[in-house]
Image (cartoon, rainbow, N blue to C red; front, side, top):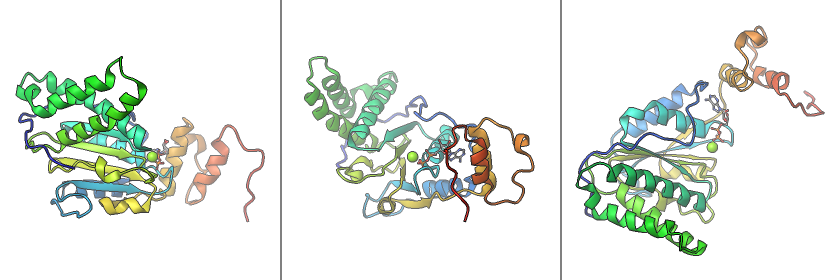
Length: 266
Ligand SMILES: Nc1ncnc2c1ncn2[C@@H]1O[C@H](COP(=O)(O)OP(=O)(O)O)[C@@H](O)[C@H]1O
Ligand SMILES: [Mg+2]
């Protein structure tokens, strides 16, 4: 990605907003949260696959392991530490473009309302003019789709502009298919920006510091099941003392629509 020389100078706060609501029932993952924080706050390291400035953490593990929840929990917990939190649905290229479009609106709202000379920054003007093109009612669908990659590039250029003060955390969520998905082009390179990628693919771990999101300990699993079933621990007290298979056995008790056949234990 090329970096445009002109850049905003003042600090802007983009109102915090994530598509994933705060999970007040979040449990466990202390070790992974520590690792994420250490990697993101550690010294800037060279990463030949992705520039030499950005700090990238890759949360990887099986589907349903809790990667998205972990990325969201980290973001909510560190709200005060960044000027902007940017969430991208990396399921495929189109959803990524749509996420960057939404980000462009939020950035423009915050930058334009800042009352500083940012409005006159060439990067902002460029973003404005592409945004107009994308949202013009006269646009055909294909013209809009053509403009979305340009809008995405304009957002990325803005993020990697050489601002010394504007800090951001970008979460690229559910990058589970690299076919037709040019991941490196969606990773802005900036010493002020940090990135969390969530993925099922081991191949993606080379783009940053891998943090494995594996199975959770039995006690946390029990809490998740109870939370999802809106039950309190005392409802099933005594069920799980010291039993590592307890989450599974509780699952069968708590799942409202049980399958007709229950797998037999060998
Ligand atoms: N640490 C956690 N605390 C509470 N619930 C969790 C936790 N991790 C995962 N979950 C539950 O598991 C579901 C799947 O998690 P998710 O993060 O979407 O998985 P992944 O992104 O790895 O596919 C969530 O909707 C949530 O109900
Ligand atoms: Mg996910």
